[in-house]
Length: 387
Ligand SMILES: [Zn+2]
Image 1 (cartoon, rainbow, N blue to C red):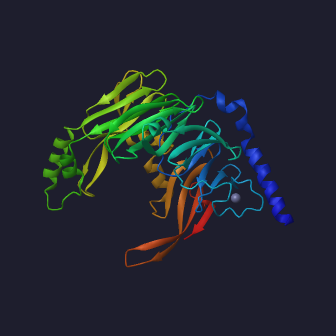
Image 2: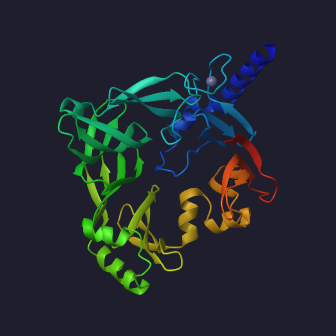
Image 3: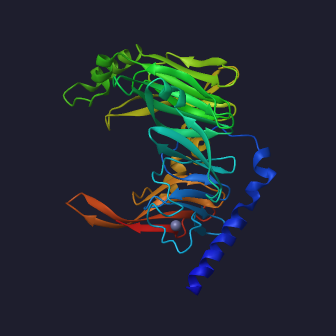
């Protein structure tokens, strides 16, 4: 009992020392950065990362001190179920912005954005999404919302309660005023997505290719088809795509087309000056789609410039694929996801159970920190679990 109490106090002290800086002005005075979806549940914050553990509970790993904190202030909690105050559910459902944590609360088909302090306490309801649509008989199902500054943006399917008819749209809302905005709506599934957002600005794209043509080239690449023939067809069909990447200001309503109707191009992320994108092609050896040219678009002048693969990757996540390969030695048991001031954050496979001659199931894994200055040293495991 004594021990537990002590550890709770230790945790709180650690939390306070980790997060005291955030309540000051330091955070708010920094200019907002453009944010995009990440493929992992890690969110780099200050010297470390937020992550969601195996039980759906939010934790923070401070890479500088190598300390991990479960973001739960419940006394004597085992941190294992929904009753834990750190419970967050899906690894992709939370945002960290401006020294606050944001989660969505779903009740009666209405989604309310909850703002919490950086230690995941002091929960406060902000804007309710899809309110106007629900008054017209529709309901929404927001996917991977992005929060930046006073705004939230999301892609959603919008469905009618009675008729079942549905369409897709991108919406935004002001957290302070609760005002909702339709950025684009009445689109088909898979024809739109958010690229990056920054405060009142959003970059998104719409893309449309005739369904039959699309199925023909994006269905599985048929083995019997001559590759050259296929490759030619792919280019021909992709030329017919109608396509636009926009920058839109939710406050002023100002829209800029950053580029349009470029065959087989995908915008990926943006920073304060440039949009980063690539064009892709079919790769014969693996019969898959691979980037073949990386480029930037100047957000002010819309001028386009080709850049290298390493530069693109470094801008996107702080390190290039070749750097990561040099560190992991190409091992499939170590995957690097992001970079903090102290080192690389990744996943290590600890235990495998063979299920056949060339197959296995992963049964033990760890989230690890790899020392930036000594990447060949043993990674530090800050969270381990077994299935
Ligand atoms: Zn707990």
